[in-house]
Image (cartoon, rainbow, N blue to C red; front, side, top):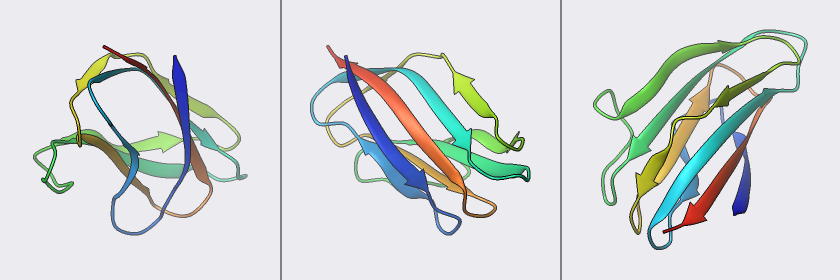
Length: 101
């Protein structure tokens, strides 16, 4: 099992994990390091595509102050597929746990 850590930007959705090979994401933790609620968007984006309304999986999800959103859905990704994210403001970080298949 491997980990990927990233800050979530408050601008355009940005790749926070890109699969090299075939991998399964087992968990995504989105941590709010501030004293205010921050809203996050998370996308699963197929290789060569862009993050948009078609591939959003969590839209405008509230992560309250000093809390962590934990997702446990499993997602299989191929080479170049990616997890993108953005937030309403700075202060969110992501930890993605994945394993090769």
